[in-house]
Every structure is written in structure tokens, then in C-alpha cells.
Length: 473
Image (cartoon, rainbow, N blue to C red):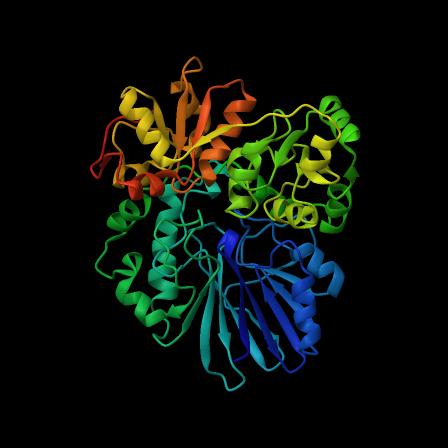
């Protein structure tokens, strides 16, 4: 069977391309659709359907643009109520893609419209399932997202639906089926996903805790809900965009890639409520940046952190990037619904500096330098901005936990009148944290280069491997 996984690492997202006898289908496409169109052109195929497994929370799907540009029909599973023209399929309904068949299996639980697509080859043999967020490799979809859109859909109700879907719809299927999930490790849509992006259903029945046949429904619900952390704030906003519709990416790109001179950029920053977002790496940002800008480096988990830290997807944004990367950054923000970039600094930070504009910087120290500072002054305040689970596993002795994920709560415990040192795993998150606090008036922040890894490797600072109660949350 001609089925290809198209994986995007920064979102841990998998779309799928199915092709047979001159016809193609795309499953769960990302916002930028040209790669899917070009893949069909390469195969001399026409895209007939865009299948959506559910209304996604962690990204804005490209189904609307793809349908508009190719004439393909959008297909959702039962109970979906999209605000645009689409086929709402019935359970067990079959769609033809060339000589292949795609069978609808309604599997509510992650969301109520969640659907698994059973792929059947030209000989009638069942090949695999495109499982969306119903079944991952090593995990299943979290059942607490839909309640942020529909209040009476409690996480307990959804977990119960998911149990029934897995036991009655998925587990009876053949062991040799290939499981093609929508996400891999790193996605916030599950809590225990494997780094592998496909597997056989039979192996998942053996190793996936959620498919343990001995779990009662009550035990399953408890197991699924244990350890869930609150989802990022942009998730329900993305769901609504996927349900109601959104602007074409072409429009978003045209608006966001508008070049502004340093003077025009400064004027736009002063005359609007735009957030100034600098996407350069932490080292370059620390050496000099536009005052009050925040740093989220594009060469990291960029889009998820944008979504986690900028509360409103409609927030106007002014960009500072490395010259030539503007289009990439606007695209990656649009993937998670941040469509309101209003321009970028032409020539980047160097143009700003060369124009004689005001600049700011953040001090950084090495792990060795930090060791000397602590030796001279043992009460030196150090804050570790990794997730609480990371901190609990191993951390620098006497460092306090102030997770970036919950920065508004974390910052309340950080003194403004003392020099404080900020670290994360390797330096990416700590600079995000420091830049946000700097924009809020904290001017005694020092970033630790290389983060906890550098501290541990130095061997000069004691680390603790037990759970420490000194957390700000």
C-alpha cells in the first residue's frame, strides 16, 4: 500500500499521504499545504479527500486551504459540526481512493468526533489504521481537552468513551495492522508517547498501558487521568479555529512578511499593542536586543512555546529574525494559530543597532563562574525553570524550581532587588524566561550558559537526585 508519513519534528506531528491509481488523500495536514500538493503532482495524482481525525487542539490544520486549492472534499467523522462545507461521515462508511478503501471507525474519547481510518488495499486486505489522537505509540490521547470547548464534557466522561472505543473498536482489529498516529514523543496531546512513530497493533496490545485488557473501566479512567498537567492555553483557541475556519495562510504570510525599517518598526511597536518577538538564538539575543522584546529561539520547540507563553492567538506580533528566516517564522507561528504578525525588522537586529536605536542585553555566566560565585556567597539565589518533573528527577542543590510553563506563577517568587541566576536544561528555556521577566522590569537576571547539563558536567556544584520540596508552585 502506498502510504507515506510526513513528520514535522517541532510539533511532533504526522500527516499522511495515501495514493492509488491517480487519486490521493491527505490525512491531518499542517497549515502550509504546498508540500502535499507537490507530492501529489510528483505522483501524477489528484487529491480527492482531506481526512481529519478530529478538530485538532495543538495545531491549525491545512484542510481549508488544501480543499480550496485542489477541489478535494474535507471529511470528518460522526458528530462533527464544522462551520464550512465538509462531509460528516457515518460510522463504517467507506470512501474510495483509487483502488484503496478508507473505512470510518468512530472512536470518541479524545474528542467526541474523533475517528480512526482503517486502510484497506486493492485486494481487500486491511493494512493499517490512521488513529489520530485516539491511539499513539505507547499512549492514547488525553481526554481533557474537549471540556475546554464544551463544558459538560468532563474528562471522566471522555475517558470513559475512550475506554469503550479502544475495547470495542480498536482492540478487536487484527494484530498485524500498522498503527499510524497523529503525534509522537514531545506532543502535549499525550503523556507517555514513544519516540517511534509507527508500530503494529499487536505489539501495542502487549506494551501500551492503555490497552491492558485487565484494566476495568474505572481503573482505566484513573490511569489515563493520573499525571495530566494543564494543556497549553492556545489549545482551545486552535480547536475553535479548526471548527469555525480561518484566514488563508497566503493572507497571513503577506501580512506577516511586511518589511519595516528600524524607525518604522519602532513606531509600530509604540503605536500598537504588538508584542516584539526575537527569534534568534539565546547567545546572540543576550549580547544585544530591542528593549522589551522577548526571546523564543526558532531553532528549538518554537511553535509550542509561542503557544504556551502568548495567551491570545490574536495578539499582534512584530518579528525580529535572522535575515532571510522571516517567512519560516511566520509559517511556524501560523501552524499554531498566531496569524497576526504585522511585520518584521528589515535587516534584523544589526540594522536596529546600526541605526543608533536603544539596545538592551542580558548577562550570562558559565557553570564554572557560577560555582565561584556560590562558593563566595552560598546564599546566591538560583532558579531552575525546567518542568517540575525534570527538576524532581535531578537538580542543582539549593536551586528553586520556577517552571517556564507557569511563568506567571513562577515569577512571583523571584526577587527584583537581588541578582538571581536562571538555568534550564541547556539554555534555551532560561533565556525565554529571563527575557520575559526583563520586559516586566526585572533587571538583575543572569543566565547560566549550558544550563543544568553544564552545571552537572562541571563537577563543581553539588546536584541532588531526590525530590526537593523547594518549588514555587
